[in-house]
Length: 87
Image 1 (tube, rainbow, N blue to C red):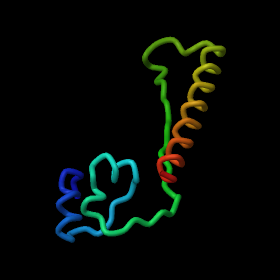
Image 2 (cartoon, rainbow, N blue to C red):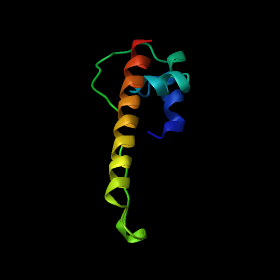
Image 3 (cartoon, rainbow, N blue to C red):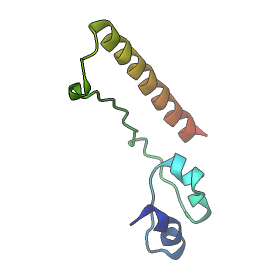
């Protein structure tokens, strides 16, 4: 089902579930959702890609910095998903 139809689908009973607590909150799907099951099994995946065809590959030191930043971003994302689910 297209996301633009989820609210009405929940309201009319065409669908009975929607995952992702942040989406439930931001799209106000809680207004038409009868129950929530917290399974803690869905996590957002963060990835980064740098195609080498765009130019010269990054120097080793820059690659290391990008990897560190990506790890920090992933940790930040995970911590926020847990915090949002608890609230």
